[in-house]
Image 1: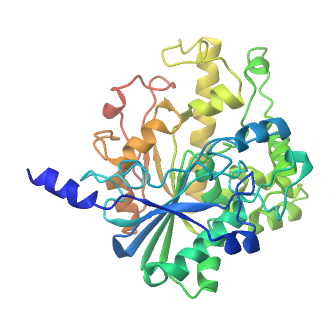
Image 2 (image 1 turned 30 degrees about the vertical axis):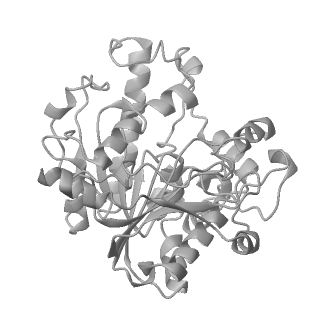
Length: 391
């Protein structure tokens, strides 16, 4: 009975849609692909604790792709509903939900640019559409500071999944400067779920791997994305790239950003990210799946991604012990991670994500990495028994 009463109280106010005023959207270029105004969904609760959560949803990579996206809710705000699912992250109200009592903001992803585009107007290369993810983020933060209790908050979790997870990492240091310029100074913790695009030396294309080659195409993909998006790039990474004689566009790759971050960052990342295998490495789902023999070519391919992901996470932690890490051994992209955020019985050696994240927020070094199953993703239900590396 008490559970239902509590859920009823927490879910009493549905997350409501707020579109940026037309003048604000125009002046800040805070518009979706189709030039409709961007916006967010909000439920205000505890005024001292806030979460701003950036949605994911891939990206568009050419004019035709972007035009298709612009006709959907991932490219336009015209058909966004008035309210959002009250049980979706970050609004979920279960007793184990990570952000249950926070003031919650969900920012839909409608720019197709990993939250990095800086367009002021449409561009021909993307189908006479505009990519303004960076500008949307700036306008949303400013609007929240000016119209809510965010200015007086003591804690902000700046979070995102997939494309949103990429976006928060690129903006991990920017968000502090932005809030400071608006006379707001909460403690900021950055949470990236499935945002490690890419692990160092990945992607390796499946068709090349099966022929015995392990040549990563990360630089090519980073340069193409930067060309299409005109991306906002982390200033510290750009400076380091120039000092090392590398093209600034290589900073599109998250693994290049991690060593330069000064913010407090928590990485929530599947060791065997399904999206990176199927959509970046281009291995067919019928070939690369849970249960393939470890000695087979698909097994060795999955194991390679697991090793590279773990090496990248380990290097991040060794470089900066303020990094928090929670890395399940699953063949999944975001579905299971969002369940972890919403509060499930998933754990690594009995430690839930919520407990690990709370451990990290308290200031303790936190690194939970599930053991793989013979170097491969664990079948569903087996990971709960995996040992954890707790540093």
